[in-house]
Image (cartoon, rainbow, N blue to C red; front, side, top):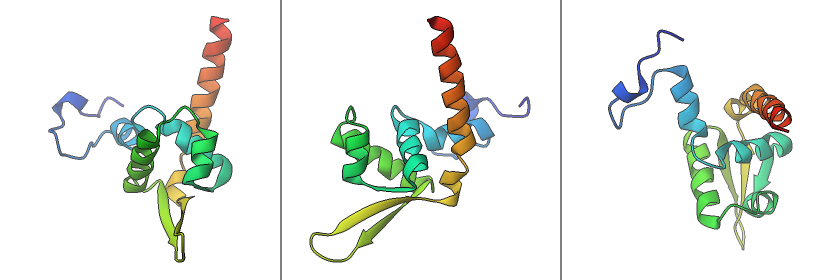
Length: 117
C-alpha cells in the first residue's frame, strides 16, 4: 500500500491510480454501499424495488447512485420496450466482485457495533 500516490496529488478530472481510491470512486457517497448490498442480495432490481428496500433514500439520491454505479460498471441499466417502459438494473461481474468488500464492511461494522455496546 506504500506505493499508492497521495490522493490529494491526483489532479481533478484524472482517474485515481491507487486501488483504494479506485474502489472509493466506485463506492463513494452516502448510501452507495447499501445500494450495492441490495444488488448483491438480488442480482437485479427495479427502481421501485430499490426504493422500497432503501426507504431513507430520496429519489434524487437513489437516481444519482444508480447513475454512479452504472458509470462505474457495477450495474447495467436494461430498458424493456413497451408501455410503460420498464427498467431493470442488473449487477455486472465487476459488481459481483464487490461481494467480499461488502462482506468485510458488514463484518467490521458488526464487530464495531458490538464493541460499542
